[in-house]
Length: 396
Image: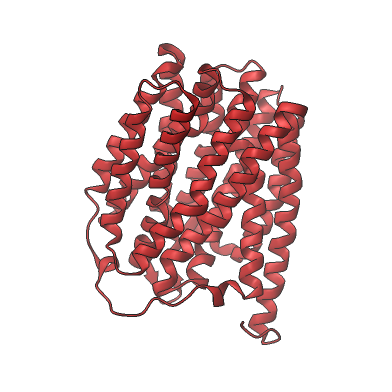
């Protein structure tokens, strides 16, 4: 299953990048809890992480679109992330933990949009991009995530959650090593083409509704990313069980990316967005109401194949469709900013408030409502795209 060079280099970077997320997202809330932070305080840190997604990705993407080597930018981002991770060693003060967490995510926020932009250039075809090869490369990120979730869950169960910062340092050191092996290739070709503005693209109704759909569907998932581990812990699930439930979702994600070339083309990307949002309604309703039943949680996690993997694949195709050439880096960054940044800020703070007053179940019920809005926005994007294609709606 090893992708050929240069795709192996991208697969390795994504393996360790998503492994770092697999260490941080499920287990950081448990470490914060061990340090004595309240649920609201944990939600505030999650919100700070999300604020970095509002600011950092576009800055990194802008630099890459305006002539700074994307390979060098990825390496710099990995170096700063490692420095921030090292800062977590030995600290227990809330302000210090929050500061170093912000440093980590301000830096690593550049890895994905820059890498996606470089990879898209390598996968460019006459029809857009090679989605089959993209899935085979992207799945290594999911493999890294699942490996980190399972292995770190077992390690922290045995050694104690206090070892969490050490694991974070280790994984970012490996990410830096992988970034140093990224090749300079066709994506790094020097060009004097002027980078065009993105505002004219964002004004197009189908693009605006697309980003609205991304925002609400990802907002629905914020409760999963921030509060799912705490929710399971409150219900008495062990750290190993928490890790395994995370692993189920990523396993089906891997299977989707592996088979993407055979199944993705059966529907238009905007139809995939609608299905992802609709199944998110079901997924988070089940998580809110049936979490005491392990099999129900497993079933809900299996839906991740469409609610995340299918959604992400559709988004990447649409980003490359709407933001070609010198717009690509900022298009990928806007996907992160509007999808994962803004939604994360609202979801982190709102979820912390809801969980502290109404319990964790309320967070997932709210996620179901957000997914309904995501479905409606995806429908609107599809309608406007059809009008534009038929000539009834002029481009803005």
